[in-house]
Image 1: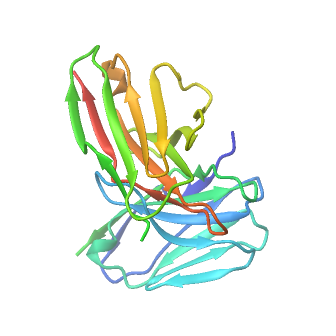
Image 2 (image 1 turned 180 degrees about the vertical axis):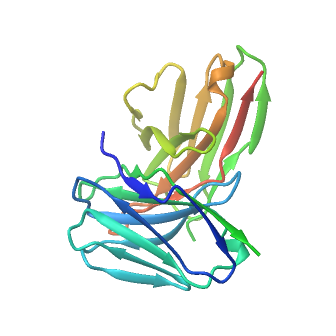
Length: 112
Length: 116
């Protein structure tokens, strides 16, 4: 099936540092989504992107839909302890389709 | 808006018993609900997609007789793990979408199933 390659798999950073993670695919996507999952909880939608080149912010988070429609990145500025968790990218290949393809996740750990 | 709940949050059962997990959209009507399974330190694996009033569509490799899905109303879907075995132990997460132009999935908090 379709796969999203998400990197890095894990990150260990100091509080206050900026974070960057990305997802790539060999297929063209019509939608890119970024979710955050805390331990023992379900994923929470952070940012949704619908157009190639689109750059969207949500507080300290910024995500972009790649021009080629085969990639997306998520940046977190000035990280704080509550940013700890697992971040998943997800994409939709077929416009209007309901199924999502998920990346493998990026586990973020922050040292205070 | 777009709150999804799951019940129970944790369940421990004996091998051979059946377990029902409920997924509810609390403040919207969900045209479609999804059931995922997640193993430790892994991504979400879609098990099935269900639309209200119709049979669920199962992903390849998911046994429909093992994982029974019922989507009886626009706010409730249930997943029943029948004759559970230890290998069915996992984190089960549902999501719901409300349709329309922005058709994103909102996830429930998950149910941790442990089969002894």
